[in-house]
Image (cartoon, rainbow, N blue to C red):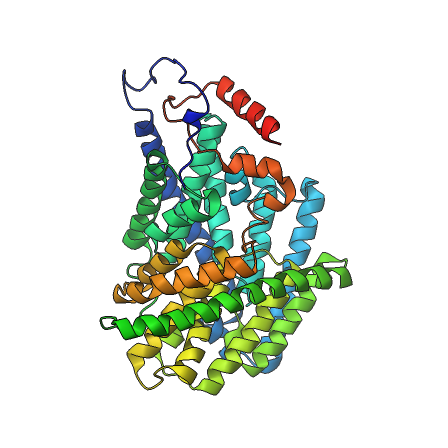
Length: 476
């Protein structure tokens, strides 16, 4: 759905922007978006480099699963416990230092906020997340990467003295840039902003978001990590029979997705009631993750190494079941403790495990390309079931592996998973991050706005903001 507040408010006559008489106001915005894309990619790489640097302090291995496998058992248990405690201690100390528990996250800043991401709370959150993910905590680092890129973009908006509408668009560009650089998926990053954060974008605004995502990916490819995120076997052409199998995977993911979200939400509420001390709460979660990793070191980390191993090696059914269950428990502990990060990559790995389980038990376990196909379809399907964003989920499967044929099976599976998941559980995994639970009707009114009025120059007048505020109050 496309929203356009120019239909709500009359066209306002303003002088042409100072760049050039008659210049389309979106042109300077595209230049800003390009700068945001470049800076966002650098922010993502800075976080990734810092993480690898910390990992090398206690292991000669760079990737977390390999580091866990190389450590003695007692050290493998201790590292996540220490990391969890230190992460909570950093969060606790930061909150006392800045005397502000938290600032808005990037989704909230764009969806219902004013596009301002305060530096202090976000630096504390980033530092806490960095400590946790570097110590093997089963949480997604990409969520913090996207947040960090969004904070950098928010600073750019403030440097340019942009008004509220443009600040929101600039932060949206930063989120797309962070997503693209983290996952090597610029189209999925654009759809991530369009489908999840805003629920729709006008073509004029989506062009800026797409520019930021493309520049971020080009920067990552040119300077840091060329190639797709995951190396996978080529999937042959998909036939009609495969669509029925894909529908089965999508249906299963659609049924499991709400259970997964319920587990995260329920465990968060009950676990945090047990421990009032933030460092203790996160330390106990880290200890639980360390103990689980004694059984399977694949419990460590966001799941990047596990996903790559799924796509490269043949896995027996018993090993897949063990990793699926243990990682599910570990992600639940990490999320319940409130360790900052994200669940997007852990969801992808859980979905890949689910697809592999279905392939082993009901489809064609003997064909390597079939295992790859159902892993990728399961990955996208569970993501669609939890985010209610089928287009983004299906395109992401293609972009992270450069395996185009899988899209023909992933698209219908993601649609089925999204429909079933949304019917069983109305709220997605990002509902709270979007601020909908807290703001109620005001959030719904904000969601109906497009980011930018169509006919206004780069420096909007305060009368538009006043009109928007009046409209929100009337709706509320």
